[in-house]
Length: 135
Image (cartoon, rainbow, N blue to C red):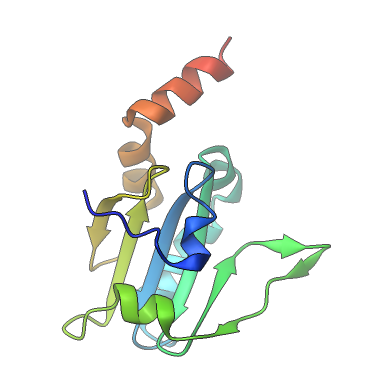
């Protein structure tokens, strides 16, 4: 497994949150917009699985569905995350990074919440979380 938490923004999530990165060359792309809609549909389930979602475009990024003092997080102008995760051959990509900082899943089409949750729910750390929750 490759470890991608060396970037200052992602490192703070290691061992605290799973990170999903939605990377797109174009904010108006169909896949990008569909992916955001898909993840917006189940905020409670994302939170339960400790998932933080980053929207990443060529010149900026932001946390999706994240607020500080009741205000949405603003876009941060920086190509760093895009440069790290984008591939010139693909217009769109979704990446799941586990609690340990390793990439667990990469897709170049829209990732359904059911596939995302199924991938996470079989991971040993997630199974331990669910077991501890049921106690």
